[in-house]
Image 1 (cartoon, one colour):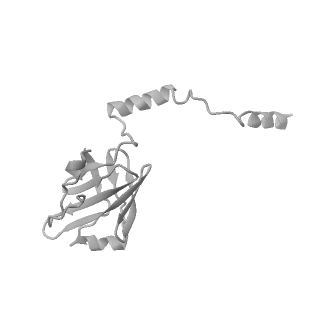
Image 2 (tube, helix red, strand yellow):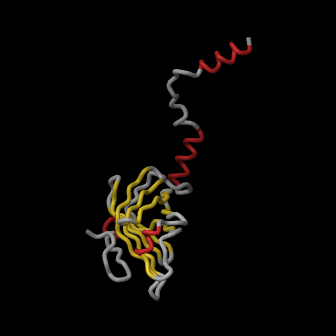
Image 3 (cartoon, one colour):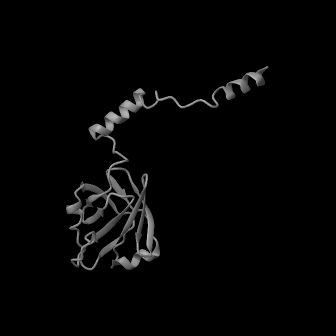
Length: 161
């Protein structure tokens, strides 16, 4: 008897369409209000723009699935990194490719975070003890024209065509 009841309960949920009430639930409305108020970052925010924290800079130009990305790290006195490449967005994951230097970063709508360890191939993009590892930048602007002006410490445009 207990098995029959359990089986009936399990099968009772099969084949039903998901309800739209979830999208209009109190929790969903609260989440939407928090995103609108800027309390919670929007994971669907555009990636294009200028990003920075301290002397670390990132530019992203392009709104399609694959965009151009540039990175500048400047700690002074021959301690710097400069890289140009592509970024492919897959939800909150970013697939970065700077030639043979390839790795995944995270994007939460307000911040781009590089992993704590990057491939050895990335060392050639840096001088001295500088590294792309653990680079974290916050959005400054979503302007394409502003992002396209980012230059390396040697004056090379990193996101300009």
